[in-house]
Length: 255
Image (cartoon, rainbow, N blue to C red):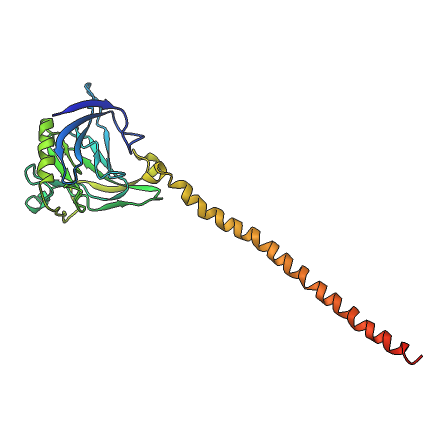
């Protein structure tokens, strides 16, 4: 069963993602997570080649969008969010297995991480050379089995669902061997199509708290130093008067 809806921006994507069509499917991973198609809405009018951003990872191990319609010459720019992920090509019926094993020129981005507080974002730019379907997955851990798969230019929506089911049925992911099929680069976090997870979950305030603690420590130190000198003078002044009193009492007795 497919349930379709359209939204403008999703979850981690806030800046540059195109309009997204959401399709709920009956494909379910071993952990019980349902596979949801998020497809870019392709312009109906002819236009110049464009950059199509795809957010990789983030709060969930997914691609957003995970179905892309692109023209020859378009650039699919994978922007790597929280975690450590890959973009690795496979055959339609061999999920989570690199096509590089038989086709050396098949796409593989290598592992591109993103950590909290990072100010630049790793990218992988893939230039679309034809409109044949391209099946992609993340080779990190069980991400592929959990639904981190996508298709560029699928013939039908069912083709995407079938690929997700094939991937979910596998027991392990195999990594690619060589970075091929695109260009690895970086962009500023402010130019990315997502906001990192810490900013959404209140991660910034905890980062500011340690900065406030050192400021309080120097403020407490001066009073401690001022108290020490004030305590030492009184004993020094009290001692001389105590010695002067016996000296005057001694001459008074012989008289």
